[in-house]
Image 1: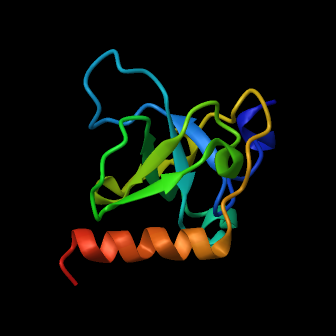
Image 2: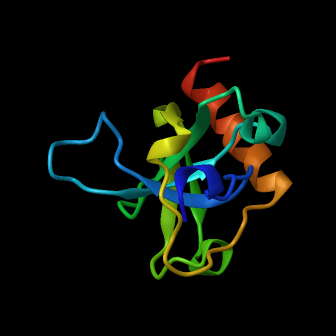
Length: 120
């Protein structure tokens, strides 16, 4: 699939990307697309808003716990809302197997955790 034919990443979907804030050699990590689909589908917008997932599970108010049943990933994971970031659409890589799409209520829970990270 060429870049022009690449599928649009939609809100709530899990994709993979190498984050510039990760240590060198870390490789791709799963992220959840949290920007609105209006932005995600806009051909003039070349970035999307994402939050990374981690398998290092900690009881932190800015982390949102996800089960394998919610994500389709093999291990339990947490959303790291304090690490919300923007990435270029072109750097997103689709998962090899179909993963789940997070619900609207889970995305709103992530938004609440971002507000906590910002002390709002």
